[in-house]
Structure formats: structure tokens, C-alpha cells
Length: 123
Image 1 (cartoon, rainbow, N blue to C red):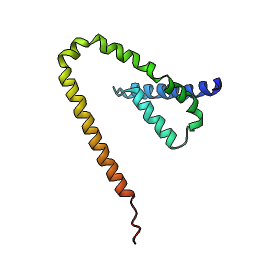
Image 2 (tube, rainbow, N blue to C red):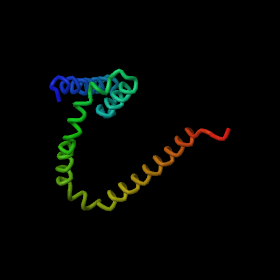
Image 3 (spheres, helix red, strand yellow):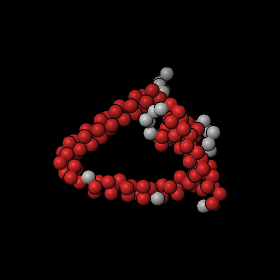
Image 4 (tube, helix red, strand yellow):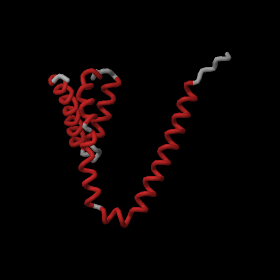
């Protein structure tokens, strides 16, 4: 890993985050800035404005350290154990139902997309 590649990749990610935050502040939206930044990032990658080689190093580094980003979430769970204990069944039911719903919708969408790509070889 070269320091200049890491720095340039990190700069791209931070500038996208800043750009998204500025857009949302101007619009007055409560939409999460990181999510908007990710959407902008995806569009820029799709149209090859940003090349994968420009951000590959920093993304690999961040992914290798991903578990560190979950520490604060784990601490929050410990802080709210009393609420989790009281509402545990509702939380588990919500997780279960949303997971099943997501799997069904994803499966149906994938099935729809794959049917659209089938070519009739008998014609």
C-alpha cells in the first residue's frame, strides 16, 4: 500500500461525504448524508468518473478494519439492555419479519430479472 494512493482514495471518500452533507443542508433534508454520499459514489463509479483503481487501496484497508466500526454499536446495546430485555420479543419479531420480507422481495425481483434475460434458443 502506498501512502499517496491511500490519501487520494480517502480524499475522494471524504469529499463525497462533504458534498452530500452540503447538498442536504442546502435542501434542508434529514436524509442521512453517508447514504447520499454512497449513492453519489455508486453513480460516479458506474459512469467511470471515479475509477476503481483510485479507491481500491483505501476501500481494502477500511474493509479490513470494518469490525472496529461496530464497537460503538456494541457499546450502545449494553447501555440499553433494560429496554432490550423489556422489548426483546418485539425486537426479535421485527428482525425476523423484516428478514423474511427482504428475502422474499429479493428472490422475486431476482426471478423477474432473470426471466427478462432469458433468450429463446429454439427460434
